[in-house]
Image 1 (cartoon, helix red, strand yellow):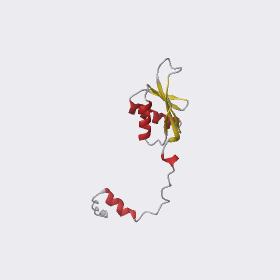
Image 2: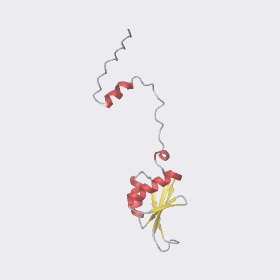
Image 3: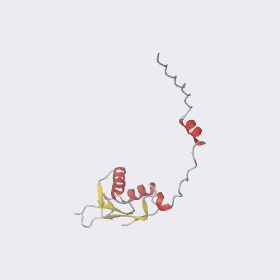
Image 4: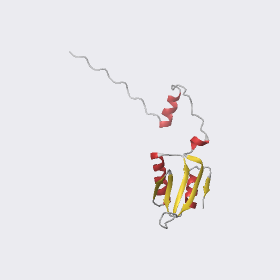
Length: 125
C-alpha cells in the first residue's frame, strides 16, 4: 500500500495591508549602503543654465522656439522633447542637441521647464 502524501501547512492569514507585510519583513533584511546624497546636478536632467529663445532666420519666415543647455543626449533628449511638445501642444524636433518647438512659445516653455525643476532659465529674445 502506498504512503499518503503529507498534508500542506495551513495557509497563514493575510496581513491587514501590504505595508504591514513590509513592516514585518523590515527586521529580517540586512542593512544596505543607504541612498547616495543627490547633488544639484544629479537631481535634475537640466544644465546649470537653459537658454530659451525665438528664431526666424533661416526658417522661411516661421518663428520657432529653441531650448539649449539641456544636458541630455540620444533617447533621453528625444523623450524630454516629446514630453515638452505634448505638454505645450506643438510640434518640433531636435537640432544640434537643442529642442526646437514650432511657434513663439518662449514664455510657456520657460514656465514648463521651471515647473519641471530647472534652476536657471534665461529667455533670449
